[in-house]
Amino acid sequence: MNQREQKRFFSQHLLEWYMRNKRDLPWRRHRNPYYIWVSEIMLQQTRVDTVIPYFNRFIEKFPTVEDLADAPEQDVLKCWEGLGYYSRARNLQAAAKQVKELHGGQVPDDKQSVFALKGVGPYTAGAVLSIAFNKPEPAVDGNVMRVLSRYFLIEEDIMKGSTRSFMEGLVVELIPEGRASDFNQALMELGALVCTPKSPHCLTCPVMEHCSARLEGVEESLPVKTKAKPPRPEYRVVALVEGTGEHSGKVLIRQRPQSGLLARMWELPHVQVPQSRSGRLPDEPAMDILTGALLDEGITARPEGYMMDAEHTFSHIHWNLQVYRCREENIPLAAESKEIYRLEHERSDEEAQVHQQRWITEEDMALYAFPNVFLKILKEHFKGQA
Ligand code: SF4
Image (spheres, rainbow, N blue to C red):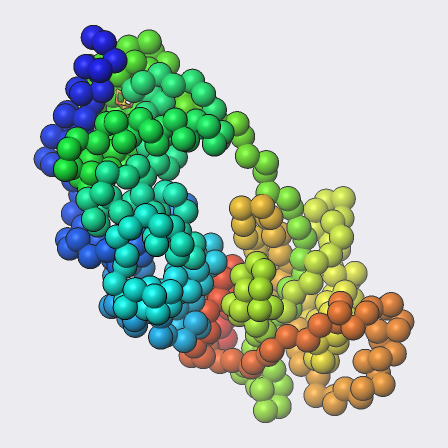
């Protein structure tokens, strides 16, 4: 079989298979470009099963682009809580504002306008244009590259831009006339259900007969992919500050800075500490550091003891957290004592930055968006109080 026939076989059999086997997913029930766009953003780095309930809640709360554009940011983040990669949610809302202002609330169907939306890269643009508008645009992600690497025995590193460009060109060639929407979804579906990263299900694969990697017996060693650098470990001590007096029964939370990692989300106060040889800092120095860090934020609290360990992985950092229970001390903090503390500890004003703070009850947790790791710690705390 020559390559032209191999390509024709692939497109035809893959499409037939998809039409018989496609999953019933909420964003597939209508060809609403806004739904498809939201689902594609949510699906980045996230499994379909995880996304479905988030997608349903999100669309219920923000049924149109305008609803999303006009919503308070904290509501959007709250709806995204637990899904991770929160910049996706912030960018999605910023892009919804663009769509509202520049396109009258209708997701545009031309390449240039879709590309200009915040948070939309080549993959998402291709997915929206092809799935929602049936435009013959490639939507090439890791799943698609895996399938193509195997079927066509492409041994180039898929982390290279040149390999991606080559594959985008290949997909354009493979899309059958007028079937971009179904074909791109079929490719994604095959990668998700059959041509899986480990132990691909070749025996049930619709294109098995002419899959080059399978015929050569090398499907398990493709695609070729250089390993990403592992996330850098960071060690942090966290304060779960229990209130006293008027704050009795409440816990102190603070808002993260306006930009950067987890921007504007809420968390428990924490501070980075040097790594000890065992990875964990002994309790005493950890508690000292924590007392100082809280003082920097205008809080007088006494660490009472270790509560739990927790961890959180970002794409480039891995947080190892040691959580300590602390108790608020109702001593009004004189400006001078704070100044003395800073001088003693040689801290600059910038280091001693003050965050926006709130004292919250268990019920108040519903009002703020927290990264998963802090949600877990707070739940653990309030469970113990019940
Ligand atoms: S035959 Fe196996 S390796 Fe080839 S595309 Fe199908 S599942 Fe993937």
